[in-house]
Image (cartoon, rainbow, N blue to C red; front, side, top):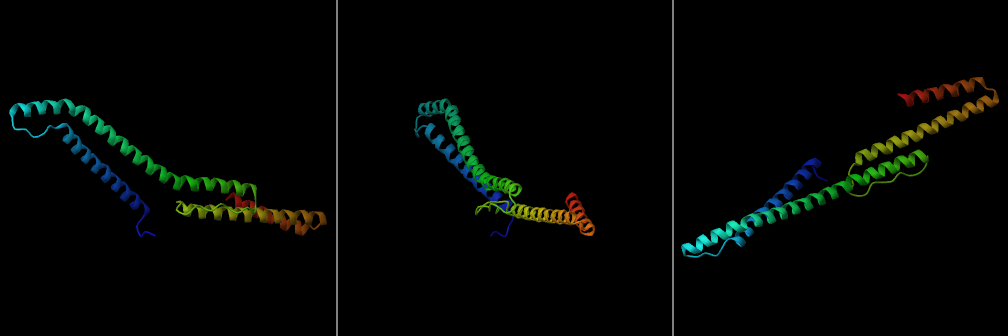
Length: 175
């Protein structure tokens, strides 16, 4: 486990990627200049001819190299976004499945996060909320059964106590 916040890890990753793209840009520029420049010659006419050839080819060469750099940077950015989104989208999907399970079943086990997924703290909050909700529903059901049983037996005191517990549970839920 890292001792630094997670944001620093992401910033370091972005810095490394930016440095890599910058290095590729410099190498591409040097390569393009080497390709479009002529060979070393000694005569003035050869230097002028080489300069005009270089000027004619510089625009298209730089355009091709620029498009290549944009494509490389785009692919790398897409790959980072895809990797990062799976670490976030996976837990969000599991959260929605857990909430559906909690709403349809009182005893179904919740789906755990995968190794390496983010949002662990939020997952624990959802588990706690679901268990609290299940306990509340169980207490309401128990108090309702007690009220029903007391009503059937004609026990006014037991019925009043059960209704008081139901009201207290209702107030707890509405706070």
